[in-house]
Image (cartoon, rainbow over all chains, first blue to last red):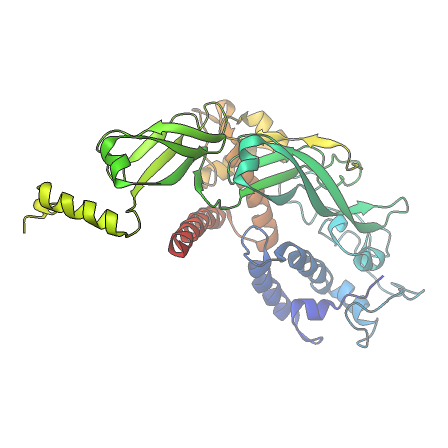
Length: 317
Length: 107
């Protein structure tokens, strides 16, 4: 197993006071809490922090940890001394956080089967919580096309597992999950029993997948509705032509109303993400001019001469 | 555990998924008292006149879960949690708008 430098994790000196440790924990917890943090590896960092805090906040555990000496380096190969924990008088059950979340190093030195082990799960659980396994939340990024069609997705997770001899190891785990068609951005999918195993026979937690839809090149999704900005030629808008419009389900023909305006929003009912009811596709018209050429210039000049039109009449200038 | 060959089917927690209070508590492994506290603090909003008739949308499940973590891990009280969750939601919306605007500028 690898040595964990808890002081380094918490960014405090080895002789830091308990108050300094508490302050460092509060500060880092705000920075890395997975519900709040924007840091990339927030979840990992937060677990490390909780583990370090679990040891350093408890004077007994901290004293035992300090006895290992100051010469160990973070990540160094480590075996606990044979007399580990001897001579320490400690209150059983002072521990808190679910041991399943922590490293081998922690579980060997301070876990359930260590001299520091005892009643577990009491500290972490807030009022009303039992010792069920922890629920996990994982993010899964999908393309809008996948949200439209549905499909399966492979998800890599790192989950703590209890070995037969009571140790906890973090194992990579791969799940294949069916993503239902019509899933929207920010929506959660619950996978019952796929969280952490329960403590002391408690039920396993659930895994909640939070779906994030990647920004799409053409479509902007809002809930089940999608919006597409459609470039049209001035004459297509003026004459009300039928144009091909890309949708998530493929191209469809849409008849523009004659005299369509730039910025006008047309609706293709039910062409958004599927569901009960399905979303709509909105088509936002954008009028674009043809590339400059002698012929187009000639035609515009003809319109200039022959079509009386003041586009700024309403501005009253 | 799971082999990669098995495809897991999950439960979609969309806007059509509502949970009676008993069901809601069972999902979260919490007692009713705690749920009432969450409602009183404005963390989640029920539908229905009295606690025994309350039901909650799936989004409340997500907020309640985050509440448990924030209370345990950061020592925030429930009023603080309500504020944090609202700000997170606001930040998310702003990020989305920023993202859209950036993409418009790229064109």
